Image (cartoon, rainbow, N blue to C red; front, side, top):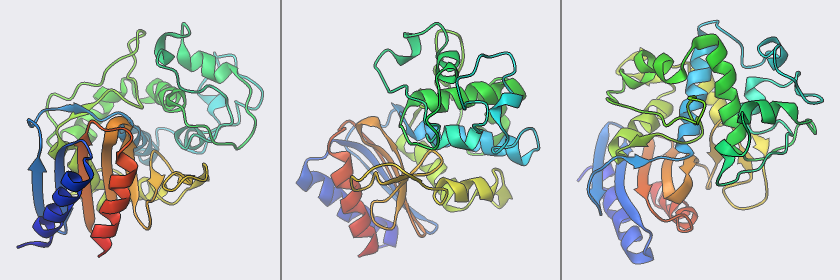
Length: 287
């Protein structure tokens, strides 16, 4: 039995003993893979795992010299009214949720204002302070769009096609822009390809398709975020932990957990059971 299959079996036992509402599981250890399903193999909304995809889009543009993650955004949005301190912010700050702009999540976030990005940028910054909000990633992609054009089209040949992700559609806001921090639907194994790419620092089948430096920053450029286990530090689209792992984490239990040469990917419908499963998964990976 391969290491991937052995870990898969232990993770399946954990799901079934804990009652975690997993839909599908994919395990990669080195080059070996194994999977298991509790529901039909269908595309599932990956929610905030899409934030990691947004980071890869911005990082690719940075590597191509189209912009810099660290340049003040005032040079990109000269036609937008900016709140106090906002012009000095960077895409890196937007992607790490550390803008200090207060605009928390709401179920009607995309329709609460005529233009969410303009509203976000018009508010004052409190300095380098963390607040988790889809508005921050959405605004980052609106700024990126000014440089690369439509972000979904930009990523097509750079990310989706190399990973074999066909017919990808990114849901749109009422103004026609990608939702950025959510809105992608993938099968479990398809989502695991993003995990494999991150584990391998942007290399896919021997080709560097996204810069290793931005993958590194996803789990090293940490911002203090809170005190709860697994939510103490946030990088670029990713969370530190649990334990020595790092992860992309979407609502209702969409998980891409990375630890050394191992990637555990889960599609689920269990918002409140995801943290306990992630912690158990890391313990099993390390055992």
